[in-house]
Amino acid sequence: MPTRKQVVWGAALVVALVALLVAALVFSPPWFVPDGNLGLSDRARLVAEGSLRTTILQLVAGVVVVLGLAYTALQVGISRETHYTDRYTKAIDQLGHERAIVRVGGIYALKRLASNSIADRPMVMDVLGGYLRTESPAPTVSKPPPSTAKAKLAPDLQTALTVLIGLHADEAKA
Image 1 (cartoon, helix red, strand yellow):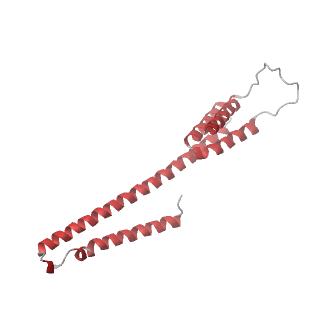
Image 2 (cartoon, one colour; image 1 turned 45 degrees about the horizontal axis):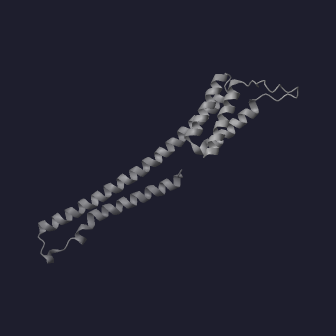
Image 3 (cartoon, helix red, strand yellow; image 1 turned 30 degrees about the vertical axis):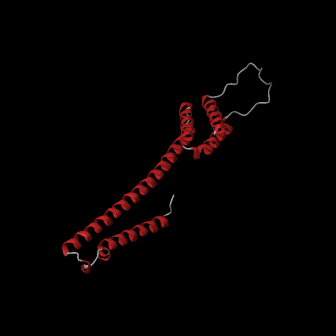
């Protein structure tokens, strides 16, 4: 994301370019149109200068359109990053909720964020791993369960584990 100084310099550059183009529009046509020694009438000279000014105006309009597109693309990127940050913050808030169903929703929101933003995937995986480490019950040193018994996890922990395994599998495919 550009810094404030870069934006100010960029704006100054745009203003300077527009000033140069306006100066070219006003002052340059007489330089490029042949003078009266070549037999052009005043009317033909004015038409030629007008055509050149029209061309310069079209060039200015094209530059303005390109700059507008670049600015819009920059704003879309900033908006997307802000949206991802908001989604991440809300999902993290949901992970701390007292109700398990809200925590499960937060886990699925993080999964969606990881799917939509490849750059945020490692962070989401770290958060889910940390959530599992901090919220899962401490292992007991009692007699191990029989091999046929299934371990029961809380719904949010099971969901976090499932999502984390799926994200690791997606990461391995990529």
